[in-house]
Length: 414
Image (cartoon, rainbow, N blue to C red; front, side):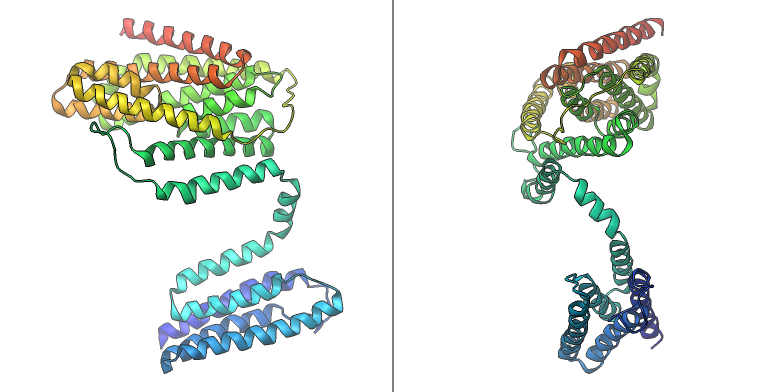
């Protein structure tokens, strides 16, 4: 009995929460001029809970069904009269009332925590009308199409792909390859949104740094493609340099957590390269800050064809790396690290660190990690040349070369 009281109380609270939002919008309307306000919605949630409790007590689901149909008919009839009087064709309040009744029933017949979360989400959605309508008005067809493609890639294609390797060396996994493709598209789309919301300068930095935590390669590809429509690609090269810095620092953190001895070996050259990339990227963005930037025509948040080409190259490189490591064992560690690191530095580094437990020397594994970082930098430059203009990849190549020289000198001084 006590639990039922709590469930009915939550059902009432859900209705009051949604009714608060609905009533606030119509707070200036005369009394009794509206079909539903805070009290009506509160009663609707409580009624849903009562009907569900009766259905469970009498073991007759038909009671709940009949109650829902009766409530829907009465509520819709009164709302239709109000809509005819006001010449209003919105059906939002009717749908919200039915949702409140259903959530109230869920409190008793299902999980009240899910119902409470659904009620809060419903109230938030109703309160976001102006934001959502404004977003819809500012949304272009290209942006909408890209969002739909990304949704299909994530929710439809990805679950259908098998999560197992198909080659004898264990290198080609279709789901992993497509997951990277989705990841790249997501980073590109998020960067596009950040630039639109925050502006070219701040959005560029935020999207590059945040995306590099996951994949600096994907960030570089996105920036290279964006630079094609910009009058000042130096800023995008600077953002790519900062993304590369974050990538190196992320790898250093992973190595420190998994193999502190290897982290000590790579610390000086890796941190020297990261510092150099950070300084170069900051200077490039500072120069950009004194120059106007013309982003040109509206661009796509991401291009599907370059993503598919990258996924194909990644699949080939992963398979080749696995085959090389299988064939040459420890002797092929540097070669496999270079091949795999060109596309996925994390996978390459983790593969190398696993060999520490197999009595491979710290120096050999450390060199493999540094090789993977260098190969990843070369891979990013290759993608920059493939997808971006000369005015983007040439400064980025200079920054990368400077960082490589700094890292090499630090390794010699170690």
